[in-house]
Amino acid sequence: MIKKLCCIVGIALLAASCKENAGTKGTAETKSTAAVVEDLHTQSNAAEVTMKHLDLDINVDFAARQISGSATWQIENKAKVANLKLDTYDLSIDSVTVDGARVTHRLDSFVKHLGSCLNVPIAPASKVVAVYYKSGKEATALQWLTPQQTLGKKQPFLYTQSESIYARSWIPCADGPGIRYTYNARVTVPKGLMALMSAENPQRLSDSGVYHFRMEMPVPAYLMALAVGDISFKAIDEKTGVYAEPNMLEKVHNEFAETGKMVKAAGDLYGEYRWGRYDILVLPPGFPIGGMENPRLTFCTPTVIAGDRSLVNLIAHELAHSWSGNLVTNATWNDFWLNEGFTVYFERRISEAMNDKSYVDMLWELGYQDLEKEVADLGAASPDTRLKLDLTGRDPDDGLTDIAYEKGALLLRLIEEKAGREKFDAFLKKYFSEHAFKTLTTEQFLSYLDDNLLKDDKEFREVVRQWVYTPGIPQDAPRAAQERFNKVNAERDKFLAGTDAATLATTAWTTHEWLHFLRKLPRPLTTAQMANLDKAYRFTQTGNSEIADLWFIMSVAAGYDAAYPAMEQFLSAVGRRKFLEPLYEEMMTTGKADMAKRIYTKYRMNYHPLAQTTLDKLILKS
Ligand code: BES
Ligand code: ZN
Image (cartoon, rainbow, N blue to C red):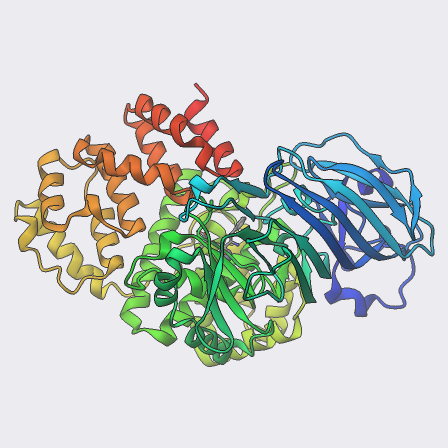
């Protein structure tokens, strides 16, 4: 039975617990859960065969929309098993060698969400396994853009998005967050294009189209990243810089000019930045998420370029992952809140170091509203509203909700309030340094927290467990001061009582005040109210994507058709799932399914495969 389980269930070694188990007998399978953690989303056998280093040698073919080449793994067959098992998803495997000699591999049948396990026969002393392969048409990590889908319109573009379990669709690998390795890569692209990875990166074009990369720190597969396109670099300071398509490089550079200061603020809080450079790559608008914390090179949506730096807390977030996530990593996707909840908390602490407190209070409050909405959508009793998730047999993307982010961040805030900021900061700093390049489960975090911060407080230790293991928003959830939003509420009330929108006291408002104002208006407003707001503040024309998205949702609800052409324009270009889903959903639930279908069918090709999957279900199901 145990054996059978191990064939279908990956077991990730926990670096953190290696030491304490040194000298104990038995194979990885028979050891207690202290030594191994079951990761249900990998079929690899990394607990038995260590995969320490990857040499990737790939070619990017835009015409065929295919990545092909070899992934060469340096292994150590610790448990002396007969097979190395790697995750693959829609890869075709041309051949495999072990220590230079061709072997006969076997690709198991496809398992939903997980892909096909690749079995490579190995001997106890085997050292090097090379897999020659090609990516498939269903590669979930890859978005291939035509020149038309870029800003420059001249060159194609490719980027990857490997989190959560999509790295296996472009690299045969042990694809679990608890499995880390270093890597080198050689990437060949068409001449005239730049290639970048989550590694040491070039700053100029290579004449030959061949690029070399090195990542000397061990990282999990979900942090493997590649982007190829017409990309230029501009330095911010010695250690930070931006990459973008040439025609938006200046704007991007201006928006993110404070990045160096952010890195400093983050390091002052929780210990030195361990990754060398910190650069940001701004992608074309089809990028399906806001940002991705690829080590040394955050991938970011252009929809945060608002022109006034008002959305740069996304960068604080991705930067914070350089500690929470990239340095100290969730052991499995069930422990996702350890990555995201910590990062939201840390992101707001960076913001607090760089802005006044009332600004960060707004971020906390908007986050709280997101959490309330998420809990209402999922149902307050839903197991998915617990911090510790159970994603058995499910797509790990199901765990990608505001629970991990906002409930997780609130728990840390509660602990901070209980322990006092000074003690809590010292605790976090130590936590990051002692677990650097390691992996933790929720349970290991809780026991570390007990030992290092809550020793004398049995009652509160129980409170923390309630937060982690029970659903809903706990009664004792901290709530930010509402100073600035109270003023916004007063203006909203005036507007709803009939005051002309143009006369409201809004001159000092930032994006976040506007977001609160719009969120707290009744839905639907009358078309006259919509027109009155639009005349005063020109929301339909706004260049701020957060405000635009909310405004278009309100427009759909109200049937305010003056906004529809701009909305269609927005939907034709922007691929960020967070914007697309609620907007299309509003059309579906307010009797405008025909409009949703028409627009979606027209622009579906501009969206990322993962966004397509989500939206197909929402819009095309009927
Ligand atoms: N790591 C996440 C993105 C992610 C999570 C992708 C899980 C796939 C699976 C990233 O750090 C993130 O949280 N991005 C947010 C930004 C935000 C919270 C500031 C996003 O994309 O909206
Ligand atoms: Zn994040």
